[in-house]
Image (cartoon, rainbow over all chains, first blue to last red; front, side, top):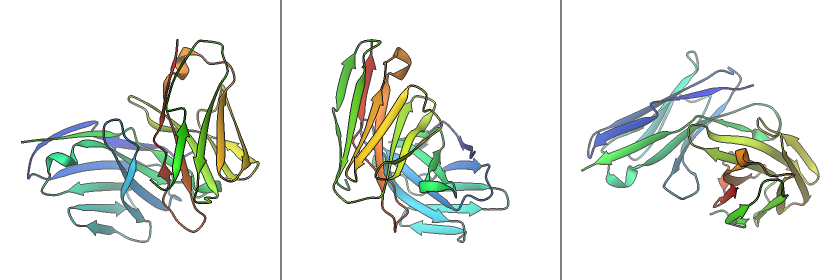
Length: 113
Length: 112
């Protein structure tokens, strides 16, 4: 089955700096890659996603890039703010039944003042 | 919140007792999922459903069963709870025409 690796596990940046989180996946047939943000004690919420036919997608301060050849994708957050502090999960969707997602193990991002 | 609720939100139980967690959604989503979340492991799929009475196993299904008798409800049962099943359980749902999985608020289960 699909395997998703995510790095780093923790990331500390100063407010205003950029943050990058990287994920690799194993199944070359995976076609959809979402990113979720989870604040402490809350549910995961989708912040951005990308399909395999697109190389980059941007939404205000966040962007995701996808390299299908290398089987990796990254989340970029620019001009970080304290409210960006959370755990971020990447995921890859398998092409089989029911749109199953395989998640990475998460990155705890801390934005310091 | 995509109309997904979970009950109970917190539960403490003893080893060996059966436990049922309920996920309820109001958006008529076809697909529903149960995940468990543990430190260092992210979200791991337990079971999923692709329609009423259509369910299948995920990567960590041992010790768990599910049922879906109505579109809106997806039940997760721990047949005989063990301490290793202490976790936070999230339900998710996804519609047929979209990509997004929406998550419920989670259930924190402690097995003593």
